[in-house]
Image 1 (cartoon, one colour):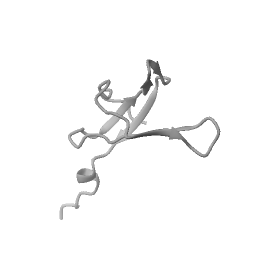
Image 2: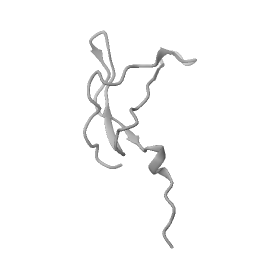
Image 3: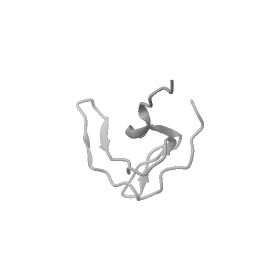
Image 4: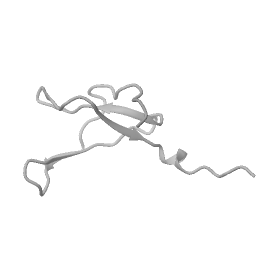
Length: 73
């Protein structure tokens, strides 16, 4: 795994959905990454009412407009 680049800024990405999944003790958090984020691996930490998730979670960001590039001939 690539090393993470800059973390997502705190408070910049609000949750679109938070709720229980169909598995006991598992929660779902939905959010949308802003379109101007650059590709890279980003650290992710979620906080609700001052209680934060564990550190060390990394998510890959791959912009849709850079996913498939034609091969030059």
